[in-house]
Length: 210
Image 1: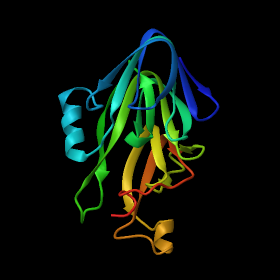
Image 2: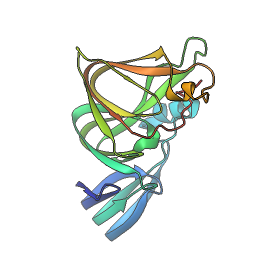
Image 3: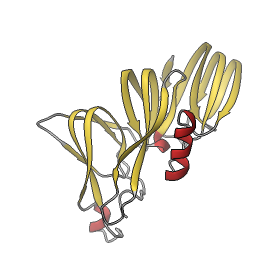
Image 4: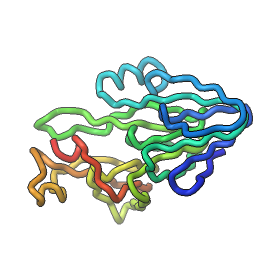
């Protein structure tokens, strides 16, 4: 159903089924398609309320029909992820599209430092199907095992899946050395068994410098 044309365009072939995609990301289609804007992005009232409280925005549209629809967003690189009943955690800004049958929601991932007491939330996708996630530059998939935990800069983090425990630790970032950091910098540590997707271009992130 999902296939890449080049590395920056997602083609979705539909035969009466549907796909959920980032609002405004459709660039072309052939055949007969119907478009519907989805409010919230999480499933049900709880997802909508959580997003309103945390500011984790994910505006989606549903595309349904017969034919092929093409999606892209700001020339970002696109990566396909297959889910076999497991759960994918992804930054909302890095999510392009999912099979309509996959469930989306919001998950609490930890505190942004004890001094701040602010929560961090991420978008969750679970079920059986495919998801398309975006990265600024070609994404790198890094394996995490019990012997080899992984520490990631928040600005480079895109997504993760598998049986991973996530925690936050104080540290320094490249921006700190360059004198561009402001306040408390921290990093994300992953332990367990799974994979983490990172991008080579570090975005400006409130998570990186608080």
